[in-house]
Length: 339
Image (cartoon, rainbow, N blue to C red; front, top):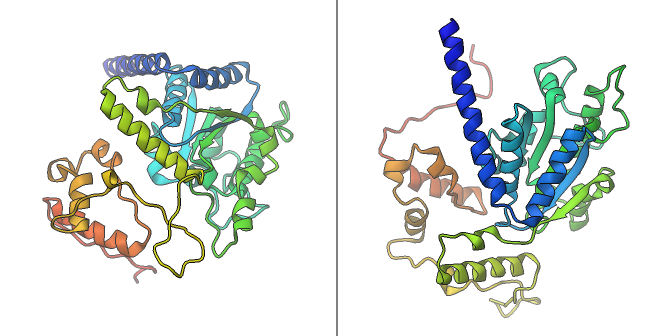
């Protein structure tokens, strides 16, 4: 038993050392804007002053890089950090990440008076009490009622006779949100533009209490492994995406009966030249070496094909599954208990 405990302590010590080295490397690569956020969040944590932070920036700006540095730094000191995201794919990019709905037991049918389904004294409640920081990525796509439900629940869970927390944002815990409002906003079924805007976190009573940080420098352009041509092409692509997000890209008509031009032209350099078929060529381009790497989670989480309809999802999935060299099994489900 003593030998087993000794080995466990040694392994834990080794893991902490590796995490400290990784975090130190990340901090050294930070630019001024990221260090500003990093130091502000850690200062709030050490002072136990609480805080509501929001990191704003477009894709490729290094938000996930910043989250990983903060998470790694605190976990290497033995502190608990809850890393969550508004979508499953985004949560995979965070160390130990999960979806926010899963972590905080947020109801799917959310409303203005909702609270998280977490009772005092449960394991989840105890975990949140011990947590020093909550990091929540892709926050703009989540309905504001979700954040308000978490705030309401944390004020209740963290309130004690010795230390009341009813009047503290998120019960006095540090919450770091991040994302890009130029990307997808909360989806309101059959809702108008007004309904979508009204559902954003910016419309919440919590928003005036946040401290916002804006990241501007694209980290991908500073990669030392790029040559001048690659860096130029990457910058051109990044600027094109930003122009689309901010509505500066020129629009065209594809039909004469259109009243307002609402289409954009994709540059030829970004188009996939199809030989056998669009779907097959797209899968081959994205999932190169799939037959030998299909079981590697790091390979899979770095690749995704985005589609607009479930029909397209089924077609693509069917083609991808045929490329995996294993026996296929079909699992059936029931909507009721079989008696």
